[in-house]
Length: 432
Image (cartoon, rainbow, N blue to C red):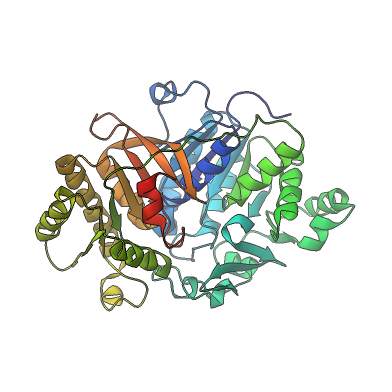
């Protein structure tokens, strides 16, 4: 059985990933709230039946020094909440490097704060087209499934290009801790528990799990839950939650699945995008072909002209998407995508979104791109999010909680760059 009360806390290393976790948990009947910082007692008191608490962060774009200076405060705050599990949520494409978004440094700090003698790492999420086989990460994209270092987008990521498919080798560049692999053959073995106990007897610091299908995720969830310490620090994608939920569901220890009602259509939506993903580029092209007003933001110019053009579109009844790039081959991308400028650009997009919402009265919005979301979200004064309606896997429509009544109750999606189908902006407008 899972204990009553708070069962899990988590921190997302970007802003879009934690909504993926929230969607997975809330859909299985576990009330989940995502905060923008470790919540105060008064903030938590607004959600008396909460079973999982998350914090949306931005460590994926930060240095190891920043992580050592800032993550302990967050981890200690989450530990004080008393849940048996704490999850450091990373992207399912393992975006990270020795100098930017180091997953290894996060493990170093998390093990120290939580006192965990081993850290499970679960990355595969079959639902999202992410697979780990014999320690190697594969991801769907460009009409096929690619090893991550040959992926058409992730191998060319402007901040953390993936140049190694073996996650043990990739992670070993970021930490000196020992790394073991519990592969698909061990997960499927009839004596997998005995094999796992034997592995743990060797005292590995990190155990990476393969994740090829739903059965292997459930097996990983069973092993993590039954061999956990309390509190147990865990690292991985939303595959962590899908693994645990699958095991809990098979044992009948969680409530019935939630059936979310339709959010219904709205007349206009407003979207800002700092993503350079070809998936988001195709979504913007679909929006343009279907009547949305599309505005390319010139990063070398001021925002006033773009804001006024957007207002003209909105006042005429059209939805709007403002973007900084159309895919990884956008001519201005390499010139503009330094970490410092990327950070400022995210804040600018948040400021644009705030002004347009205040002036137009639009009540449903989208922010595209993990790094962009981390900087744009706080511009709206939001302190918490809950799931309103699942849309594409990993990018639910959320209800915003804020002190300012203009933004309290705002419906908003924080979308990862590679998430969603071509008609995603239409889905958001229709609320389905």
